[in-house]
View 1 (spheres, one colour):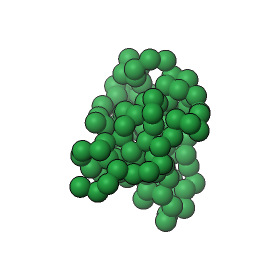
View 2 (cartoon, one colour):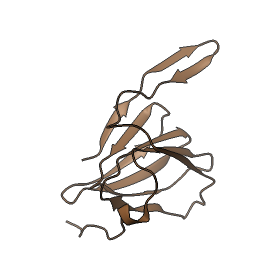
View 3 (cartoon, helix red, strand yellow):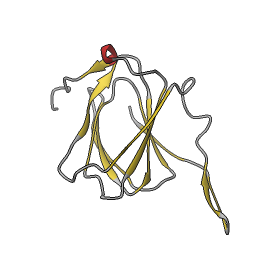
View 4 (tube, one colour):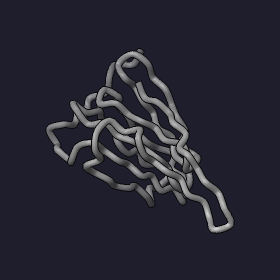
Length: 124
């Protein structure tokens, strides 16, 4: 089941600082970010055999659809301290990116095409 965590954010006259630590199962082995996504594009559309992921929209916003085989949900990532943790079984897609969206993704595994499951779960 996907979970939302609110990351610690420290504000000062020098700027804001948000910390992401101690919430991921195991070491982070892959980091990437998604940006400049056209308005009508859907990203993702898969789940994994073993990979956990963390998604943080550090600028702008996007919608994440998640289906874990039992429950479907939509989550808006619209704050830089809002963190979505996806388990391997969470089939997910991202869409409705704002023009300024910058989506940070951290994973506990390196890229392996054999880890991807593209077929969605049947709709409930």
